[in-house]
Amino acid sequence: MIPPGSIPPAPIVPAPIGDVAVARRVSALSVAAPYALPTRGFRSSVIRLVSGAPAPEALPLDDFGRTAAELFADAGTGAAALAYGPHAGQPALRDWIAGREGVDLSSVLVTNGALHGVALAFGALLEQGDVVVLDDPVFPDTVRIAEQYGARVLPVRVGPEGIDVQRIEDHLLAGVRIRIVYTVADFHNPSGGVLPAKERARLVELAEQYGFVIVSDNPYRDTTFDGSYVEDFATGSPRVIKVGTFTKTLGAGLRLGWVIAPVGLLGHLENLRRRTDFHSSTLSQELILPLLNQPGWFDNLLVHNRSVHRAKAEVFVDALRAELIGDLQFTAPAGGFFVWARLADHAPAASDVVTAAAERDLLLTSGRHFAPDGGSQWDRHLRFAFSAPTLSELPVAVGRLRAALDACR
Image 1 (cartoon, rainbow, N blue to C red):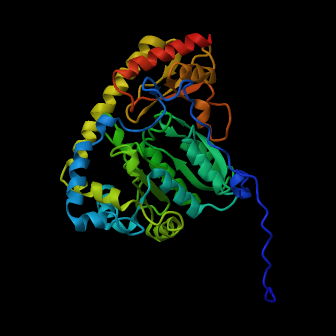
Image 2: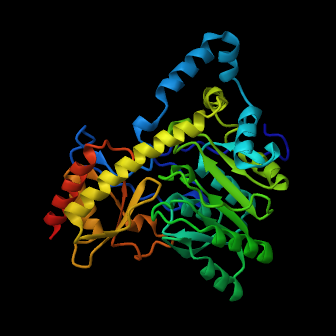
Image 3: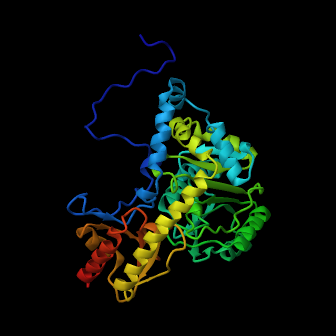
């Protein structure tokens, strides 16, 4: 007998296999567009110009191997590296990041890469219907995060000198109430643009005047080819959240990044992240800490990495200019991992080129992938990621691209 006031159990009705009811708020979300796949599978001959990952030869594999061996040679340190850790990250790593960023440790939260940091910032700040300014073009997963929190996306163009701050000001003067301005200020993905220091300072002034928050997602800042840096957003402003990552320097698989946020906000970010993942990998943090604490180790690694990626950019750009100068318009990158190119008006459609390239074991990304509003403004663009392929593969990739273009005419 069912006690008074209790709810009787629902009868069990077997559902067809695979027919799982998904929550409406999830089923309403857009699905990520897949990269083009080679028709003959992922063979060793496939060249992938799609991933913004550092060159394999830039990764400190020997140093990681030595550190891991030392870490697990002692039962105490090995067990500690596999134990639970603090929600905000290992204090020693937070302290290193704080010193690098010129802030107090209390402003630092260790994350699972930069995208996690952006998601935490959006999740902590956005209400349904809030306006979020996004780069146009933009890293597409950022759009999906904004969508998840019910934000309204306001695209603002990014050019060689970064996001159009004057356009943001025009929107504000017209009465648009902006909650977040999101931008990648250094070696923007995909365009490669760099926001000048004067424009960064002006954007902070606008944020403090109008009450919005800048979320600066800056994974490529340390990839500058000549070692020069533009003065960044002021971390002392309560209207600035900075997101960084080790993904482009130490390896994407570590899943380690960070957020620099005002102290009053950081506790909310930590509280939010505890509802999804508890903390970032203790093992990854303990693996890199001995290396980061070696004087000069990280800076020397950056010098090496710049040399590797600069050489690849030069080889790739030279091959593009030699083979495709009449079909592509682009600017040689000064950092980052990408060339953002526009197909000439007489050239085939980008979507056709991507398909034809995949048939020739070359993976590319269409510019349409980076439209924050799903529009057609980048339909004649292609993004080439030159960092991961080998130096010898890059001219081969351009030859396959040439063949793909010819096949589409």
